Length: 172
Image 1 (tube, helix red, strand yellow):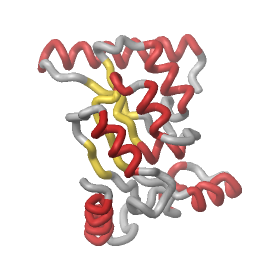
Image 2: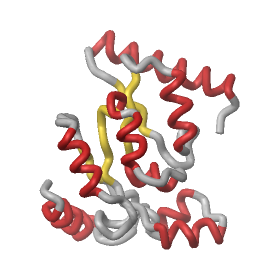
Image 3: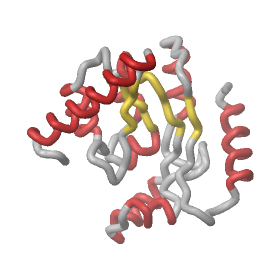
């Protein structure tokens, strides 16, 4: 985690970028929390959101990275910060691989190589609950399906097809 002074500097920089984008292009900017980055854990997400202007900087909620970063349920952050969540990434997370990663002290890339982010529906994220919450709130933004892999891993077309079939089972 960043010390408080560095978080303040980091947040100010993120706001500066968001303001420049808004002023020049009229677009909103979201911050994507990410493992192996400075904003990874639920507390780091909280710190960044507390240190930034809610009118300038939103959050890209990544369901898989939220769990990998130590979150228990993406619905927690969705409910608490719904007004700041302007973009969503549907990504699943394997607790079995996470257990091995913790035991082996794997870094981010070793974890990805071993399948920490699995096909939708094969991990711990309750996508039905997330989808239902977003529908209840009349969320009109983007939901992007992601599955982090390294070059040469698996069959992307087959994974994409499986993910699409899974989304149909939850009404998307």
